[in-house]
Image (cartoon, rainbow, N blue to C red; front, side):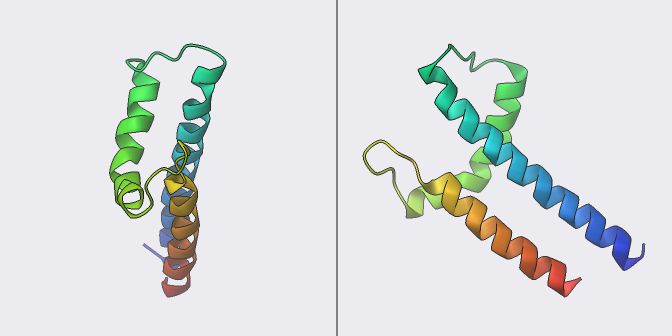
Length: 89
């Protein structure tokens, strides 16, 4: 595999993780406006995929006033890590 293909795959993985976290953020606000079924396969997939990544950030920065800042911090760190990895490739 050449480096362009590796860069494309790595970038795609980071982009997928980014959008899954964004989807989880949106899902966290939707119950304010409508009922969300936590047993829906899509909702479960998003939660089960992102939770292992978000848990360490949640331990570092607990919710403040009921607002969870861990997804925003995770997205920031994810972007930094992606830039670092892409420079290494």
